[in-house]
Length: 322
Figure 1 (tube, one colour):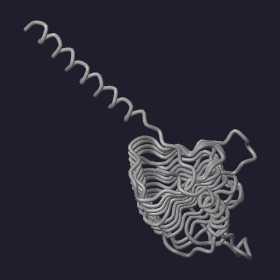
Figure 2 (tube, one colour):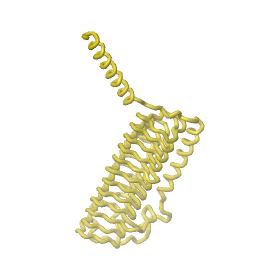
Figure 3 (cartoon, rainbow, N blue to C red):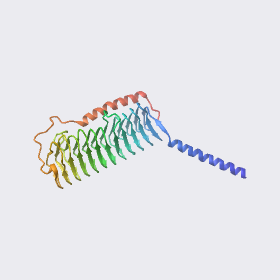
Figure 4 (tube, rainbow, N blue to C red):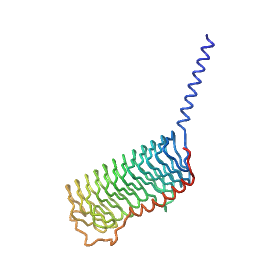
């Protein structure tokens, strides 16, 4: 009886160890994607190897997604349940795709979100190692939970909702068009400044040390005449490319100093106090730009070029065998 008992216990222990090993193997599973994939579920992490392309449609990834250096990931109708990392010169194009984890671009070429995509833990854009590279983050018809932050390149939100704050610190520009932010908007040290048009910012807004700043209409940068709503204070200071503040509703205060040239504006409804250069704001004598810049169009051209090349390469590689 003792011998049988010992053998039985040993057998059970072996089964338990085997089960643990299987669980660990599943947890560590990493799938490489080169080529195309369809409506399947990837049980672990997904990696697009450096310099390769992966094109997915209807794919579910249970783990983390990594786009390695110089790689491309184009996904439509996808679901990513973990975080997404885009490495140097990598590209992510997500259309009607839900991402549960945080999306981080580590100096990637660009990241595009559209077609009703959603980000459940926000976005962070980091600076590339090569200072001459101009990465971008382009949000169109996208919902973001938590914050959107970028410290380099182009940051553009169009027709999107952010349940958090948006920060562009050291970007080329940070534009918010026809979008809603439940938190604050901060634009600091952006060489080409910022445009905010037809948008709602429920928190405070601050524009400090940028190039040109256009809040509402005025035609300094963008041909926009729609009203903005700000739920908090608006501070505009130390900008050196011209400031236009036209047709805004501001529940808090409007103020700022150090803008050169001095700001212009009209038709603003400010519920709080005016201070600094905004106490006696005057309309601009004339529009500064004969042909307003279309930043979104330029971004769409960059997106189309990289996406087309990625899709062609992925289709040429054939099935990824997911």
